[in-house]
Length: 278
Image 1: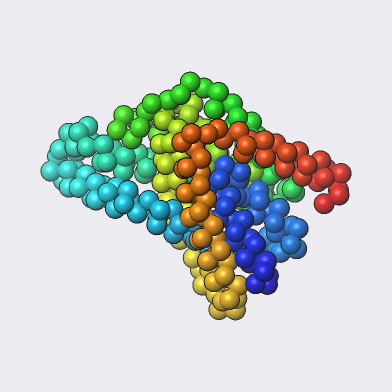
Image 2: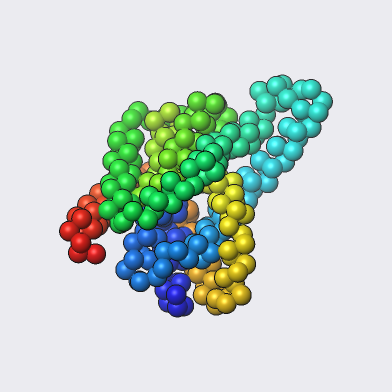
């Protein structure tokens, strides 16, 4: 991988991690058309780490509040008043909901790692198909009555449903942000809060994946420092901007444009892959 390829892939990762169009599919597509080996796990994990830095930077005030609330909640447990604090403090509830919502993807990552890897190596028609599914889910979820649930009123049902959606999105082509936002809309979450919860829910998931593959990053940094650094910076900047843009867009406009995009790209790549054109 050269510098230009690293910049392109970094931008692709940063934009598509948070826009509802599937970063996994676009990374596979980009690696294929740029002739970059898809087995470069270290670089893939590093650009994911860049998106983690982007989302933490964007929501740093919320992250600090949630970490503080979680720590206070631990104190509640030691003082045998956890239930009372959980009921009265929405930030304590939200902190635990983030943890609960992360459990499904953690279990899938640990128990089905080899199966998931085999899906990634099956061919471009797989992410293309699931990209079409992403567009369909996103389109249909927006036709549901407008929800009003926010972090102050959400409960276990909304949390578990979004957590399961995030676990499903481990498949290439199923957008993590697209499926979790759609799951939130289906369960009655406010549209803007569904997006915010989706982004915050990504933090422990990306962090966990990064820690598991940390040794691969260290090995690659020894020989590909410039490539890794520019890829990281490209993903960080584009990731931050994509979060800002999507939150602005979701307030007053439909996300149908992303559904249409997923349908078009999904169909084109699927047909080209089946026909052995690509």
